Length: 351
Length: 254
Ligand SMILES: Cc1ncc(C[n+]2csc(CCOP(=O)(O)OP(=O)(O)O)c2C)c(N)n1
Ligand code: SF4
Image (cartoon, rainbow over all chains, first blue to last red; front, side, top):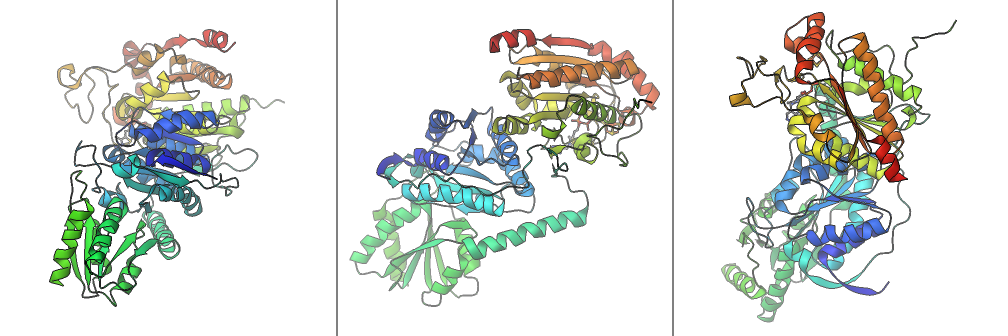
């Protein structure tokens, strides 16, 4: 397959279709409109389902309906719309239905703005909706990785029977980069649990109401076992210039890209800085942080928020006597590599 | 000898109902089960049951069933039907579910003319949560949250949602019926049969509103509750055919 030059939003849509996504339900919101628009054009062409729903609430429930029949299904939105999807996400997690939900984050709270931000980290990694569940979160940092992780998201969703969040931001969605798309997926896992009519067999049901407390508790622990297995099998991260580093930046998605630029500059000035980039935000790659902390004591967490992932870093390093600093630019401000390299200098000097 | 009153294949046997004595839900469940058998639709049936007293419908109905978040039944039904058009999809909903929290989903699934059947149980209260006022409660009706009677100045007016959606071009069939008398039950079965035929023929959205007694929350005995449906509810919500555009739809389809 040749390289194509494509925007992040279009890339996710194309990768989803290649991953065998047959249904897309969504409601327009900037900065991810191009994703739905691409689906409108190409999903129907290929015989799939594209439906512009009346709201994000309706969209996520359409996702539930399609997922319940065993179809590969996706919805996408940006922060305010993803808030509306939280009820449905809770149901998807409880039902253990596979689905892929894209959030191209923007500034908030409220309507906020349409500029890139990372303020939905808590909402994404802590469950977001009501009840005791989590949603695995993938955070790509390039358009190529958007393609690869979109396909991965569908596989993980099916394998673990869980909704998967693909978390980007306005910048990831809008920027264009060359991409080599993976070949279209052709064999899909069996889904014996899917509701396709009882046929000649026994009837099935998918209940969300579990009135018996002990049964509900069992269900909660069952979900936890699944998340633990994912933590063992599926945790992903990237290490950048970490081999000889004595100071580690921790950043994901767009801020990780900016951090790389900043680290290159800092390296030219002789600072031994590296980057730990979590790719799965839940499960969080805490083991690699702990391993790094055997050599390095200084960590600088960098986010386009007032400080959310930094809490996971603190939790991961709670027993490591590490110094954890934070630099954040919330509200839709995109810091430059020059700005961030200055910040690195400041904390590095203090070390 | 011919067995006339046979146990429906798609209704579970030997289950104890959680519905109150005199409740309309059980009657409608049985009608659905009978029709799926008579029309040979049970093997591919997919029913969405609501948050409401019918949330446990899968305990009684013996075909594939999913539970919905409160009000989202027709969105789930839409997703299932679009993903798998071979399914025979029914959304079963109460009046709080369909005409309060789920109004947007109701209006838009109807307006899109989704090829699904909606069974709408109107008992003029929120049954499951203990008898609070619903959008469908009658003027003057005393409920847990309109203890002095529903007052239009603060509570608004009874919502005729089925009449609203019946206007939509996408709605092929809409009828209002009762299950408070044997004659009403017969008409209900006929209306739901027509709704099922509508989906079977691929003609679009169909909805049957069933005026249904809730003796418990109306604080009546079952017989008085049935009389209240016949004498009071039907004054506000007139039973009868609200729209039948099936012939037009057949022509449109060619
Ligand atoms: C989001 C949400 N809000 C509120 C509830 C609580 N709740 C459950 S059923 C119900 C109303 C049921 O009334 P109706 O739809 O008329 O059905 P009925 O029980 O009368 O058959 C409510 C308010 C809920 N489950 N979810
Ligand atoms: S509360 Fe009303 S609607 Fe619910 S089961 Fe009892 S009678 Fe039926």
